[in-house]
Image (cartoon, rainbow, N blue to C red):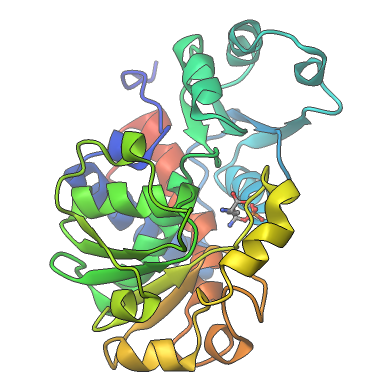
Length: 309
Ligand code: CP
Ligand code: NVA
C-alpha cells in the first residue's frame, strides 16, 4: 500500500517553498531527460487528472494532458459549456464530486476565489492552470527555463513591461521566493493592485518609463495587453499600452546577455516586436516546452511526495 503524502494544493506560486522548488526543478530535469531519451517513466499509472477549463487554452491543456499520459495516467477534459459547471452547479458541490472520482484536478477559471473554494472542498490536490490573479504553472516553467539557460536567479533583476495581470503578480511572488528583484512598468491607470502586493516587501520597484524598467535587467518579459476576460476593453487598452512594447531599443538597454520571455500566445506588433520574440535573446519556445516537464514534476510531487528515483 503506497503512503499518500499530506494533501497539498498549488493555487499560487507562494504555495511551495524555495527548497520544494529546488526538488521540483531537479525532478523536472530528470523527467525531461528520460522523455528526451525515450525512457518510459510511469509513476502515475491508473491515476486520473481532471482538467476544468472556464477559459480557452492551447499550451495548458496540451501540456497537462500529454504530461499525465506520459506519466502513465489519464486525463479528462471538462469545460463550462459541456458540463454542469456552466449551469450553476455550486463549485463546492462540483469539488466534492470531481475529487471523489479523480486523483488530481487542474482548473483554469476567473477569480482566484473560485479555485480557493474548489480546493477547500476537494479531497485531492488542485492546481491553478490560470486565474485572473495568478498563473503559477507558467512561472514555474519560466524559472526552470531561466535555470537551464543561466543558472541561479537570486540577486538578478527581471523587467515586467505592460499589464499588471496574472503573470505579473506571479512573477512578484516568485521574486519573494527566489530572492530576485522585479522592475515593473505599467501604463497609467493599469498599476498594481495593492491587495495583491501586500506582504511582498521590497521585491519590486515601479518605473513610469518602461525603458527605465528594462535598463540593466537580466530577463525582460511581457504579456498580452488584454487578458482573457477583459476583451471588452481591448480598444482602450491598445491605445493606453502603445508605448509598452518590448522592441530592440528596449532590449538594447537591458543587460547584454538578457533573455526575453513571454508566456504566449503573443501578438507581434503589440506587446512585442517580431524582431525581439523571433530574435536570438528570445527563449519563448523553451518556456512552452518546459510547461510539459515542469508540470509532470509538479504532479509527481503533489501525488507522490519527494520521489528520488
Ligand atoms: N501560456 C499559456 O498558459 O497558454 P494557453 O493559454 O495556450 O494555455
Ligand atoms: N495574461 C494572459 C495569459 C494567457 C496565458 C491571460 O490571462 O489571458
